[in-house]
Image 1: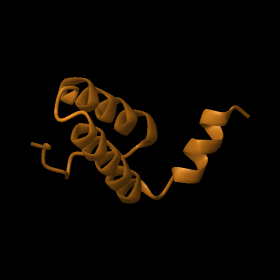
Image 2 (image 1 turned 180 degrees about the vertical axis):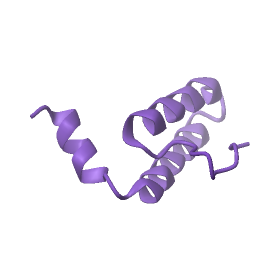
Image 3 (image 1 turned 60 degrees about the vertical axis):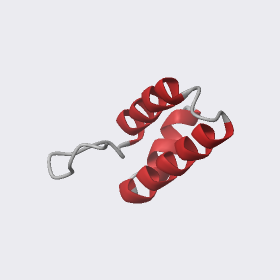
Image 4 (image 1 turned 90 degrees about the horizontal axis):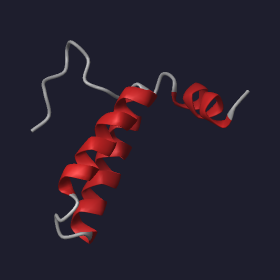
Length: 64
C-alpha cells in the first residue's frame, strides 16, 4: 500500500474536515506570500480537493 493510499484511507469519511484544512493551509500561504502566489495556491487547493475528496460536490456551492 502506497503512502497516498494510506492517507486517502485515513481521510475517508472526513471530507468536511479535510476541506477546512485545505482552506486553512491555503489562507496561511496567501497571507505569508502577501497574495503573490494566489493563483498557484488556488490551483493547489483544487487539486488537493480532487485528490482527497474534499472537493465541491453537487450539493456544495462554488467557492469565491
